[in-house]
Length: 303
Image (cartoon, one colour):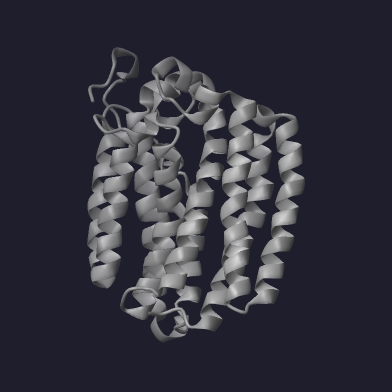
């Protein structure tokens, strides 16, 4: 991964603010939230091991997610030079190979912290670190696929931290209901990640990244994303009804209706409204995750 001539800058230190932007703190919320959903769904009081709760939140958000953002920005530096030349690496505020070194050091830090969370936490951390590099780096670069790329990110943003939070608190494998619900929300997150690809549409098209907005066009990709977000939530509602949790199912149903309202606005202008949906409709989605977590807690989340 040689730095191209357009990305050569004089030898100097990166700007501290640019390093913070590189790891994108705004993206830390989804995995932290999912980890907390896992903690709640485990059925174990978080106060019984609050140190593991806090450590897991730090690992899921600032460390693993931050590392994945740095790795992605390094591997996408040529794409970003087209889409967003103001970003830290193409703008030169994080010069030379600093972006690569930050990602590598944070990968090692993630593994060190993950080892403190026991075998389940460490295993999940190893998977998360490998997935981050598989998504962004050649020769694998699953980001090129509009199916596998968003699917892997959705799994690592929602399903993996949920599983980890439940496993760490329960000190063992989560129950099958927890695994099933976490997997369904991870599947639905594929649609969220597809909408996130809209911002890179032009650069992806020029550099051979076959995201769904590129291959299907914005309108069809947005409709597919809406279906992918909706169907897993309907499955969760059905499961909760079967597990005698009607009020939780009703609450998630109400949140889904809120998403339908937001989806109508999204579909009126998919490319222009995608960022708006990510700040509104996604809030309903993640709220439903926590409702489901409390429902699982009541059923006895640990296996």
